[in-house]
Length: 435
Image (tube, rainbow, N blue to C red; front, side, top):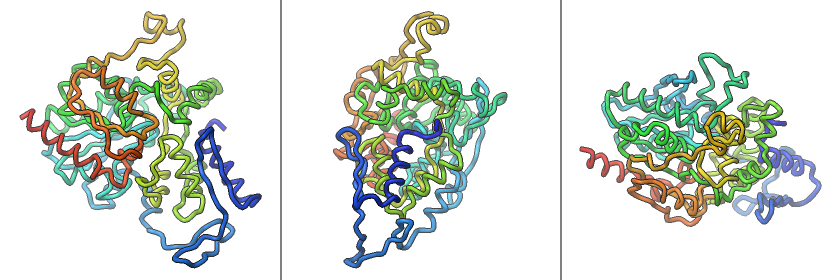
């Protein structure tokens, strides 16, 4: 039971109701938000009725790449589409072994892409050429490196512990910022023999950058430009029902107490379940897309729903329960600070009753913040709080699409026109300013 998120439980309940045939239609709501609204009328296509079989499937031509890409790892996805793929291994100071993926362009300026919560390096390429930011950056002449933080699909090894040890999962995003990102940056700069790189982070990928700056301010000299997509630090105004549920009900703490140290493990059951629910030919695709939106915000126009099987084939990519608990703490406290162990252990670890706040004034690198009006996880109010704390913000840009949400920054159909081209211009401008 601990292996299922609230969203998966909702979907499971939904599918049971759908297949029971107890009603002609079904609507599920949470508060004043409608998750989905399914009408069980015979579907039509080009004015003609289409029979729906017992598995609720609508027959039409499928793109064979969809099924294949949902199973391929990041390296093989890059290789499949004719790009120069490389695997690299990084060992952190505290013994975690991380996989780093590269679309190699030796001699070019390196750019490091850091994924968000429950995500992996696949997020930058799984939408395919011309649709993935990783490919676009390569085509524009960059040497593209894609990180994988501890605990995700590609970074599940340690010099001493296995994933079956509770000690392996004893981390939050604090350790990612303190160890994973500095080690990854050092590896890239040493490998390429350059002194600086570009940094692009999405969601949690921005959180770990702020923490790196707080804990290791000397790394700011190694950054040409940091670009934050849906930047997160404060969660005071977070509107995501899923995140707020985790915060209010302390679910992650309960899971931790009963020994469930990995949040949403990527096992065969969940993989199969996601593929069934989000297969591009099922009527339940409507349900799947809305459950995803329930976490991030609604913008159906920017999500290519045909790609849902690929998305769920690569995510959730794994996280520690303690990591989720830390996010819940940020929401409850309204502060951007280290993990709260309780007043007694805080005093032992930190020397103070309350956990110390991160030093955002240490983020001396040039920073560009990009945010969306419809982003439930990084709403404009919280981005503004962050903006006021950062000392060197060179751009704060609200995407000119009122429905643009948290995932549109990486998967949006019009992301290039609405955002990515602007990012590329900024990269060129600040490279020239360094020269």
